[in-house]
Length: 247
Image (cartoon, rainbow, N blue to C red):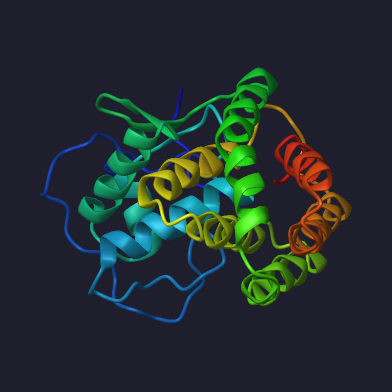
């Protein structure tokens, strides 16, 4: 399968292969558009982290297509950096299960079906529902109200149909809720499961803007139920949220 770059045809021949630490840095900043709507250049400090964030956004936004292979040199050229930080970021995504290493070619975006998404939703519910029910009994209304801005942020991203921004704000909201339990291991595990649930499904259409808006509205409804200590509503909202299009 020929190498593909987001939104382009096959990569040029010189982008083939996965040689280590030998590719020159890409061109300096020119202000040109980057591969996923950003700028071509990336600040030299924390390059790997910035590339990782950009690739995660591209994955959620649909710019990295399940089943397609992308080479680090080709993507590095688009970002205006050497292939090394791209490869390092892709290796992290491989550890997370988002991509698979294809020797001498690059990285294939993992193909997933609805069954895997349903399994993730079940595991998330098993972990988070009991925690939220416990928090509903112990956390004050003022503490819940302090999370309103995070809930509103998901609504803002949904209103403009920005899937990557919605994914980030959605995780931030759930992370803040679970952080009230005071268990860092819980937050880390839940974050990993949440991120995996946001990866695109093979051949499935992207979530509609209306789906994102409805999903975002559930965050405010959940806060209302938590403040009211309505445990039945909390349980139903969390389970429905996890099985939704974007939650």
